[in-house]
Image (cartoon, rainbow, N blue to C red):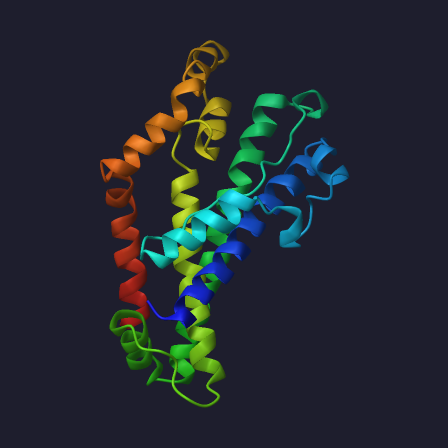
Length: 226
């Protein structure tokens, strides 16, 4: 992978993680909990959300070895006692991060489609750069560079959204499921928390996560290279 591609991956991953966490904090504020707001987390400034390991070290290692970009930021604190309807409100707080990523990824994908209409030869450029591992051509090519950024934004945000929607603690999908279950079922489900991280690692190791992502990835590639 070229140095340009690595830098772009890391840039869009930082943006995706920042949007994800800011959405959690903003939704919590709207639901009545100002905890994250008081800590300066309702912002698109990435410095407010960066975790040295999850936002910096892990993404750099994954991108260098050619693995799909992945990372996390500092958790957004939520005080359930400030929420008007704790279980229902927490469902929306949990869902807001993945939904924000899907929205950003969708906007970026539409951006690629519009750029391809403006510059028909862009399809061949994207194919060569993204699949052929080539660097950006010499000179100033703003539309080509913007198309590459849009592509990485689409893929990264979709990856993060799908991963976080897995209904296993501590991922956002578990908060969504908790809000949908009855109180008794939610109490039983909460016992899964101590084992959640091990279940997530098993899903990654067994390739189940990749099976979930693959169809969406193929859909994105089809639109980009069509």
